[in-house]
Length: 130
Image (cartoon, rainbow, N blue to C red; front, side, top):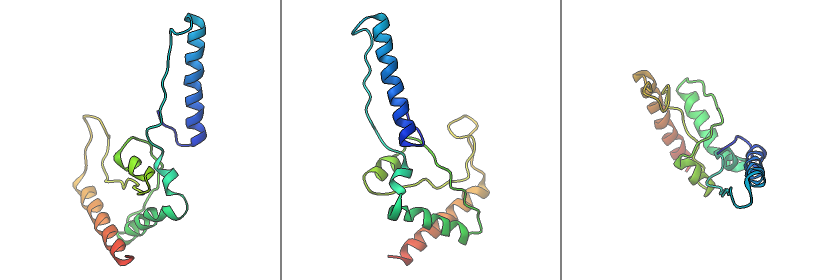
């Protein structure tokens, strides 16, 4: 389970706890149990303040390639979410693919070339500021 905000996440967690308690009251104590554990936070939480520099680098890399960057918050349990939570901010950079996680997922060659150029520019920018 995930949510774009900490409050929204907590609301969902509380809903599940209350649902389990209600079902337990209805069907008898011990008939329903629930175990909730945090696995990762939204990457946005790890990109606040000075830790937001990867977004600045990405914006510059897109601009240098004349590509309009659209920063869109995302959720998901990808490895970057775990790394970001541990102090290594890892936002996703869009590759240009479409129809993710379906049998119709595809990546146009033009988008692949543009995404590659952005990644090369990210490397150059990072090297400039080392």
